[in-house]
Length: 453
Ligand code: HEC
Ligand code: HEC
Ligand code: HEC
Ligand code: HEC
Image 1 (cartoon, protein in one colour):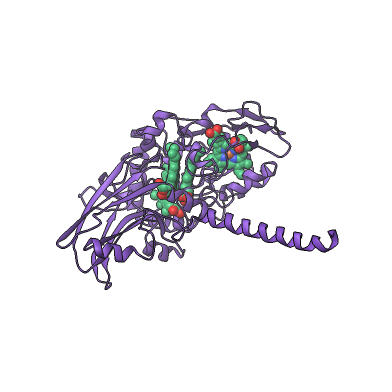
Image 2 (cartoon, rainbow, N blue to C red):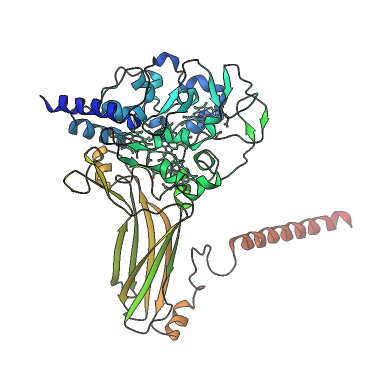
């Protein structure tokens, strides 16, 4: 038997044996699904969705790069599995098996598009691997209790739940059922679920954190509403998604502190860094964490520029294969080898030390994020920037006198202290405005005198 046939049979058998992890998509023609162009009445929402990773899910160069690898490794068997989440419409319509997108309809090319989400009615349990159920009645469902639409529309409590998102944001291995990407499960086990804060509250609202209520209209000509959601679905994809929104999200996710003594005459300087996941409703990072990169970099540099300490710690999930090798590709995984990411509202600390030299040593701790490694970005032909999520700098002096000398020109170094020394920015602005007003007043007085007299 050819290996491809073996894999296919194994996949089919596993789907039968482990129904909970099956790719549950029904068969449906793509003609049932309008493209986003048909949703023009929701101009603002359409604009928000354009450029999201949901829109790009099937055309994303990083996805296609990885899909090609997955297909090569399994003789094509993984095609419907991968494509099922990245373009459910194309897979339901039987238009897409592997890399060849020539038969994919316009709606299918839109990846995770408006009509797929708004035709959803529920999910089988547990959510994951496209467990969403989809109706073919053309009724668009969302959280509005009194939709006033020119098309069939209905209220759906399901759209207000994390399970809605979890139907794709929990990824199980198609054969052995290992939970490979667990954003929904991480959320469910964490403090946000207990408080009733769902994915939509953070990812479909204007800013980082829970920015509700956000009043507005769901459609042009529709009624004013106390709160409407946005179709932005912002995460950490600075390179391919909306860069400024993603950066803002990443910078709001973690708090970083650096504890180090201010004065150490000689010998070893001990320091502690602590990262707290303050903003993400799931682990930090989450999702495809064998592919993403988040790392802490700690350096100490003395006045002469000599590096006394330079350490990197990565926060990743490593997958393990049947022989115990790690890290391996997700299709080879049978177990999680290690996972040192940070759960929601939890912290992780690290200790470092270096030998004191000279009068002053600058210590910096910085937390960085990249959507993928430089090597993968290069191979996929995309530019993926590194984002600084948080950064703290401190100076260690050899004596109180050195500290005074070192701090003379500017203010003491503070955590994320903004603005140059002296006055805060708003005070300077006030002074400038005041000065302009005074000058204008004086000018008017001077001009009036001759005419008034
Ligand atoms: C990934 C799934 C998904 C996609 C893609 C998506 N939506 Fe939504 N949409 C939702 C969910 C979920 C809600 C309700 C959120 C809640 O109640 O918590 C919603 C709410 C809405 C609403 C109700 C008003 C509001 O803003 O709250 C409208 C109208 C809407 N979406 C239109 C659109 C349009 C148009 C598109 C495409 C341009 C789109 N949606 C894409 C999931 C999606
Ligand atoms: C049909 C499956 C599906 C559903 C339902 C779905 N997503 Fe996604 N989502 C995806 C896929 C696939 C990607 C990755 C696309 C890519 O990067 O190529 C993604 C990416 C994302 C990202 C990452 C964006 C970034 O910048 O990295 C966020 C955030 C997100 N989804 C939030 C949500 C939320 C919130 C919901 C529920 C309202 C939801 N998704 C429902 C499939 C889905
Ligand atoms: C309390 C707010 C909050 C909640 C609740 C929340 N998230 Fe997030 N999410 C964030 C922040 C902040 C980030 C950016 C940091 C990161 O990448 O983890 C993020 C990142 C993401 C990403 C991108 C991960 C990456 O690195 O590519 C996805 C996908 C995502 N969230 C999906 C979800 C889903 C699905 C849910 C619900 C099950 C959810 N989020 C609940 C705040 C939240
Ligand atoms: C159950 C749904 C699901 C399945 C099946 C799935 N994905 Fe994804 N994929 C997602 C979600 C959700 C994200 C976004 C998660 C995040 O941002 O961390 C994603 C993101 C990605 C990304 C990152 C894209 C980027 O721009 O950063 C790649 C690459 C990827 N998937 C490849 C694959 C491959 C290859 C397969 C098949 C082996 C696959 N996916 C199967 C849901 C799925």
